[in-house]
Each structure stands twice: as C-alpha cells, then as structure tokens.
Length: 131
Image (cartoon, rainbow, N blue to C red; front, top):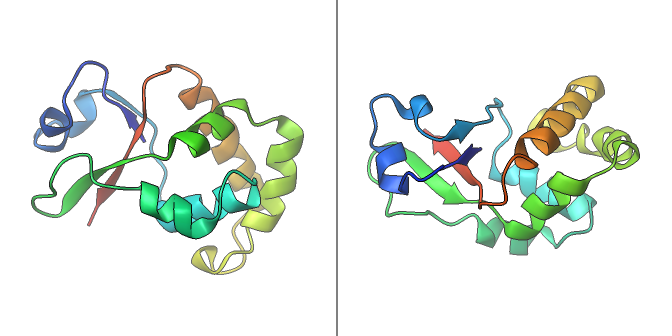
C-alpha cells in the first residue's frame, strides 16, 4: 500500500526508485483477493463488489500497476479494534490463498501495522501490484 504524498500515480509507478516516492506499507502475498475476502469477513461489502473497486489508477504499462484501494475497506482498516483483528485473523488465516494455514499471529501483526499505517493520512491509499 502507498500514500502518494503529493506525487502523481505516474511519478510513483514509473520511478526507478519507486519506494522513495510516497509512504509505503509492504506485505508479501496479500493482494486484492485476500483483501477482498477480508473486507467481506469484516462486513464492509461483498467480495465481488470489493474486487471491482481495485481499479488501475493509471493505464497499466509493463509488469506493475497502481490500483485504487476501496475507500470503505480503507476506512474499516483504519478503525478496526484489537478484538476485531484477533477474531477476523483466525477466519482469514484459513482462506485458500493462504493455503488454509497462514500464521494467525502474523496476520494479527499485519492488520495492526496496516491500521497504524492507514491512520497516518486521510488521503486515498493505493495498492502496488507488481507482476
């Protein structure tokens, strides 16, 4: 995830020093599918609707794309409580994309760090998806 911080999507995605522009929160293997499933588990929207909200911020060129992050999911992750995190992490750990056995403690840590990151700014966040 990235806050652009006065940079355009083109500046971020086309930069040779991509991680030096904007403010970044990085996590491996958590892309639009697990995030949409998480959103559905949290009751913010259904999976298909969330998937449709991850749209390219600019026309993709090459192997990487910057996707708009669903506002409703961003809002929820910004305000999620520790109790909600601990409850949803157990269910989320069992999804097929995590091979049904992601470490719950790792997902709890991810969600707490994501909450902290997303709380830093009111601007929209984007998801960087590199192929």
